[in-house]
Image 1 (cartoon, one colour):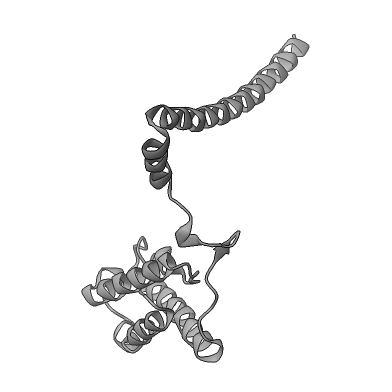
Image 2 (cartoon, one colour):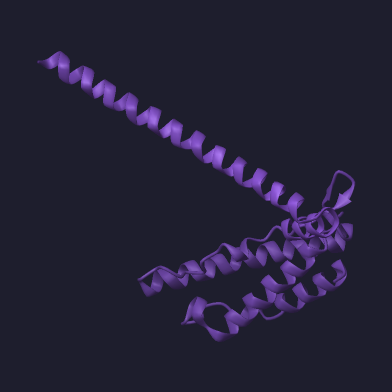
Length: 173
């Protein structure tokens, strides 16, 4: 997906914003759910191309979890307005400055950085099964050591609390 295509899809989603406010079923409304699913899909597609999209649509509840209908509708409208404002900023920025630069990491596009599954497949295919086992052992060991260090911290913390309690108890006798 090209960035201009992404922006055109966002423009299309913005064109129906008047139909989304004050929906009695708020986040459960079919039209809203379709709109939100399209938006999150377009964002995911453009992020796969290495662009960063600042839009909180994926973490907003749109009123879900609120029991009182008036509060639920108010939160739905507020979060919808916030999302639409963020989308307008994306479109306005594109109109004014063009497409942003893709996110790069050490000279590579984010989409060019291999995933864990690609690394595992590559190790197995090019270096053999035993290299793969060693790699997985090292990763597992690092996770295990991290867990042990965290456990040691909690034991020391609890032991310190216990010794403090024991000291106070002995002092009162």
